[in-house]
Image (cartoon, rainbow, N blue to C red; front, top):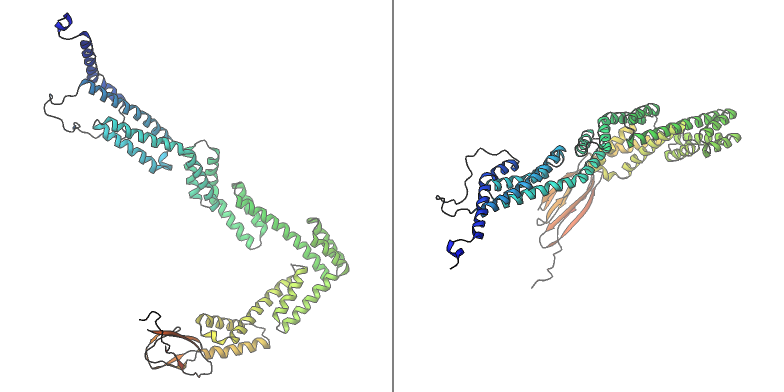
Length: 487
């Protein structure tokens, strides 16, 4: 036996035992300080006396943890703490951007992984804790990667809210974008525009109301104020452009009307001067050039006068459609002729009244319908209130009055069946089975339907006249349906 064998253990074995002893001492005395430095949980720790480990034997001598195992656990703990440090850095960066204002749900979901990691860490499941921390870190990293898209979405929604006139939503979205990029000039501009949007919208509504009343100069003033508040507001700039164009159009039309008025008065020189002013306002205007030409030979005046006289004659004859056509011909020469504008409006209304009256008279059966009857009554009273009523209108009112009176008088109608057919009268309801019934029906069109098992359905349309008399109506299913697959 050699000397080394006689001593019991080789130097290599003693060296390994020494290393393991040093590692054990590091775990006992050094590792707690490291843990205190790196352990930064997301939520405050609960005050607990001690974390119980699963299945720990009462005796220290049962399943003791070797120094090597304790060293491996320390390394796992160090890895979990390193991942946690990265996670905390990302969390701080996202919190500085007010992440909960624009991605609260995703942010809380990411933190939930960290909380699960904390739970694993407290039970010394450091490998599981590391995985949960990595999941949380990855989720927070993904949130950072989404920042450009979320910023773009917030800006798009803010701009859409501006277009829709929703100042509160626009302000919310642009401020949200600012939390992601505090120095972004477009987001700052959006916040500024949102702050003036309500004022701009009020001015636009006022301008629209003024435009509807044809007060274009006042409308232009409101729109200039709106554009001064927000020079990027598309609707305000567009409306301002339209109003200015309309002001120019009105000025042109006004000068043209002055020329035609002078022409009607027989003052050709004054008319030509006005048309030349209009041509200067709109160089190359065909309308102004044609007016000048027409004025020189008095053709325009003669034509306008002819249409005017013809329209008035047709009105006296209650030929409203022809009168409208004459006024249209006059307006084709000058759209601003007062007599033609007013005359056409009146003639068109009388034409509509004439057609409604004639339709009610020619289709009295439709008066049984409640809506048609109410319209006919309204039309009747509209015609009755006219101060100037010619012979045709008086005749129409008399005929309609008689029909309206008759339509309210029920007529007894006998309905005959076979006591086997289920009868329904659409305008009245289900009559059931019977041999004969007498119903009081107002004049008008009616539809009766009969059904009977095994027989073909029948449908009958009949009219209750205005003469107070009616013939019996028979409704019965008599045609048996033959079964094709009968055996």
